[in-house]
Length: 233
Image (cartoon, rainbow, N blue to C red):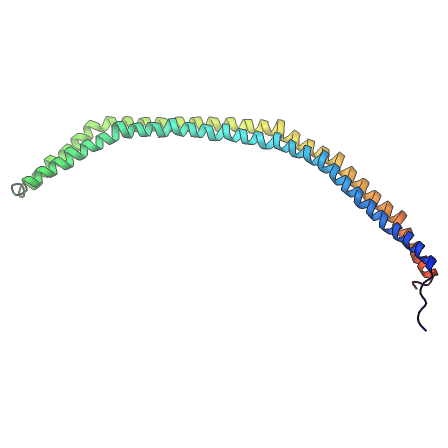
């Protein structure tokens, strides 16, 4: 014999049980979406705004105007400009003059009189190269010492300015942490503790209540009905 189909009246209890099972999950899904939109709008956006305007923007401002701009200014006006001036006004003319009168002119003269100067070459070399170089060094030694003194003083000034700027930047960063970063962190922790955590606990408690008070009894009732009508053993 073929198995008898279930009676027609059993369809309505099954539909009711389906609604009982499906509707709580649907309501829980809609509640979770509503809570997610609420948290994103009233917690996430304020926290992102607070982070942007209380941490990111001030940190970028301090980095630009306490590190990048002062270092660029010091490099330009204490190193690059004086070095370019020294090269254009002192080193380059001096090197050109030395190259002309100590190398080019003597070399041309020696080449023109090379036959007559082969024998006394050592003597000529001594008086045309060694003696002028020694004399030039003795004459220009104060200039080189002055250049060295200027460079050393510039280096000490740059080091002093950088040290003072470093100490000032450290003090400002400590104050920024004390009065901005730490209060912002405490505010974020307070918002998390008194906004997100209570909502999460409420959602978890509601889920546990729905499971223990609605879903589990409904499942037991549906199982009992199905067993009673013979649909399930």
